[in-house]
Amino acid sequence: MASSTPETVAPQSHGLDIERIRNAFPTLSRMIGDEPLVYLDSGASAQRVLASIEAVDRYERRHHANVHRGSHTLSGEATDAYEGARATVADHLGARDRREIVFVRNATEAINLVARAWGGANVGAGDRIVLTEMEHHSNIVPWQQLAAASGAAIDWVGVDDRGELIREELEAALAREPKLVAVTHISNVLGTLNPIAEIASMAHDAGALILVDGAQAMPKTAIDVAELDVDFYAVTGHKAYGPTGIGALWTRLELLRAMPPFLGGGSMIRKVTTEGFTSADPPAKFEAGTPAIAQAIGLAAATRWLDMVGMDSVLAHEREIAAYSLERLAEVPGLRVFGPPASPDRVGPVSFEVDGIHPHDVAEILDRHGVAVRAGHHCAQPLMQRLGIAATARASFGVYTTTGEIDRFIDAIGDAKRVFGV
Amino acid sequence: MDELYRDQILEHYKRPHHFGRLDDYDLDFEDTNPFCGDEQHVFIKLDDDGRVSEVSFEGQGCAISTAATSLLTDELTGMTREELLRLPKETVLELLGIEISATRMKCAMLGLKVIKSASLGEPADWEDEGEEGDPAEAGVV
Image 1 (spheres, chains in turn cyan, red):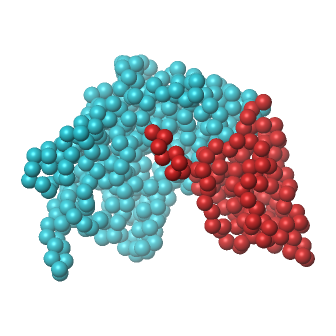
Image 2 (tube, rainbow over the protein chains, first blue to last red):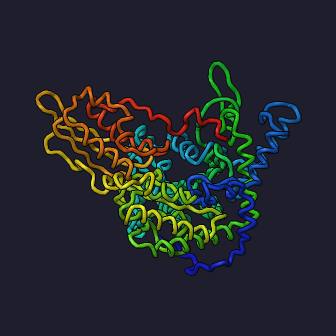
Image 3 (cartoon, chains in turn yellow, red):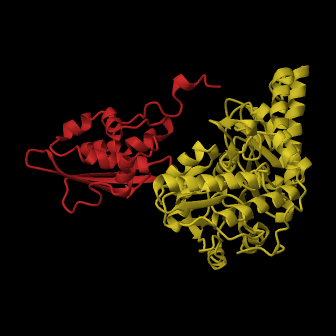
């Protein structure tokens, strides 16, 4: 189900100064053996932007202390920086209020938080949850755990041969009045950009809430949770040029207030007695223990850098690189690409298989040429099953990826074919 | 000639020995390489003395895992279950005759792990050596 965005991909319309962008990423100057690194694994973890590295470094060198605790200068500075990071991420995602951002470790933890806290309180025996075949394990397993604990059932929306969600199956699942639809914004295997606003509207019409896994989307497209009209949105820092160990969950404040807490401990309480505890207000209610302060600051710096580049330009670049990759891969005999053909709703990653060469061996030979791709099931085994394969090789792009790098990637595939005699 | 993908490795990958399913078997086990989703299923037939008389495997895997298991199946006839359980990892590495990097060690050892698990009738206790997270590598950065 493709959304109705304009049909043409305007090349070079975004005006990214690619050289200047690449200079903002120290890792990109690495050599792998004798070859300059071609990093096509940003979908697993994007390279770190200097502005974020430096923000973390400044904080660690000058301002570190625990947040919300000490009545001293450093603790005040750390708290300001941490809460400022929350406001930055809230702005970037289009939240009305910074308190709608809960910092977590990653998108996986954000989804687990919703499954345990919201799901535990709102989903019971006989209730239904809708998932899609293109979900990452992080948007499957927490719901399977919830279903096992609550007696709820899961309905699956299939993926068609183009690599898009099957609208009729979504409609059929919604007709069974589910409590929640959990769907990815961009498939981490197929590069499908799902029409989230449309799915959200359909879910709400059926009385369901909608959770969106935005792990792949955050570095690629502008996100406005109000415009999308979703209920839960999960992101992670390290796929958006920020550090590992930090992610965020956006949810409406009224939902956060109604949800029971997730993990228990310091910070998340209003009062503790020997009889029990009362919870703090959100977002503290969901942030037990000392948070990843430096990482939150690093995520905010990466987010500001993305905003400075401009998400419209970032998306235009992503579409252009995806389209160029698809064009070049189509020239390789015996190579099959998974996912939709080039269109405005087709971004990276680009997953593929080469006849007679296992994806792991493709990745091994590409690495010899300095080209980093991922091989495997990409934490999407139900999708692999749907595609009838065990694994793919996957090239995923970043704001720094160039067409010249795609050319080197294609040449390296040629070498893999030579080694294997196919 | 390619150092890793030698002719012998590619030959076993393209035409693995003992590939397929035994109709009649005494031991079998299926396992996956969780890193890449590769699967191998091993079937073993024992004779009256409890020694391997026939062996086969099926599944999908990369050149390294497929060649390693193919090479290994050539060596198992006549072995007892106890001997299978005692097979050292070095046997696989010697059969492959190539340098296996830490990241490919899981591929190389998948077949041995499945064969040991089949002998035990349960997943073999397994720790891959020299793979990711080796403490000796901790100082690399």
